[in-house]
Length: 205
Length: 205
Length: 205
Image: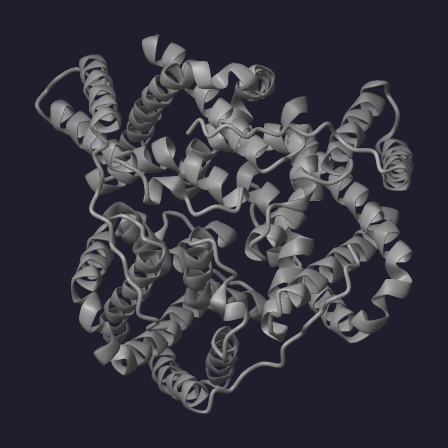
């Protein structure tokens, strides 16, 4: 199935962003591999823990772990040429974001959850691997400050639910949302779309 | 029921403290909403995950999410006048702390856990939303350093268990502990009561 | 049973490292106790949550909490003489690392998980209490940067599984791995063995 192939590309791309983050904090190879696994598989794990959906994906399919570990080690090796692939990399990361989101939505919908929980499940799966990565690297999570990223998971999830509601088949809805969400992310990167920032200075606490 | 009403006030107050924390880190509106939800609902979620108590509260009642999101957006809007309400705000936050604590104790007690676990369940529910908020905002959790805050959850939980043990009805015990814990928090704010600090300098590691 | 005794020594030693970390961040006694409990019991809790293995160890045996709390309070009291015991302390911490790892491997193996999950269960149990401690203290986790520490959990777990596969009894395998892993950790400390570091500077994100 197409989504499975994209899923493998997605966890590889996410593992590589994790490995590079770890490299920026001068971690050793063990830290690199852990951060890569958390980035690639942490969002889905968090979703499964929040929804009580056991066993976690990688516990059931340990081969995903092998995949992310290989991707992380390759990233440390090709890092010196990484700036040449910057664009490719952003594109793969965007594809991963949407793919993770749709998987997260499908998991929650199959478990019979209400629409808001389906959207949150998509968001947790798509965007929270990066949040866990940033927490472990001791940084304020990027997705809370950067251009449109996590919000796209909500749009994608809403479109997915809407299409299914309209009677579109699951495969068609998945493909449309994959294309649409991915396009939205590319546009957000290209035009540097941002959410309004909220800046608060007074020390109320 | 009274506790339900106070619970809604509590998650609103906690959502607002979360939103202001996010504003101090210059997050975008998405980040503000996420931090607000984590602050308001994260303590109870952590409790439910630790106790294996599924589904989580907001997964069962997604309307709580709507509530916290509204409170967060209102906070960004009234932030400029927030310093006028500083006192109101601290009072609501204190009320929320005690209300969360009593809910946490009741959940663990109903599940048949031993007294120490009931106290910890109250503490996780009452104080750990703020810990998760601080971790995501990349700060050392305030409650580990500030005046009497989290310790009050333990006193409140112990009083609750003690009253029930003495044969007091659940409703009466809840009201007494709500009043007593709240008063204790107000006194702690007013007199700046603090736990002794432990300062360690030598680099043993 | 020997492992139980070593387990109590291990959670005490880990609680003490947690308490000292908290002291370095000028936390109050409440923060010290929380960080100590998270350091000592957080790895096993994370493992149980990831594997869906309820109830968590300390929820079933609240006496472990009493143990870690006492160890934390003792640590604040003897902290001024701590540098005299630096070596003893590192040794106990190393013993704890291996003991936790073997317990984590045994739990996952008893639950029928595949070999990679057994290794990860050992690693989470052995090394992630320290990761949670560092996240709560707002530091980049030490084990991602320091000398051979977490990797030893993988070697120990692999040796444990290998010996069981060869028909060695569980008790014998546990003892051999306890001794071997502990020796490896002492050698790593003595010779300052390190994993290769991955340093990445270019801002690809």
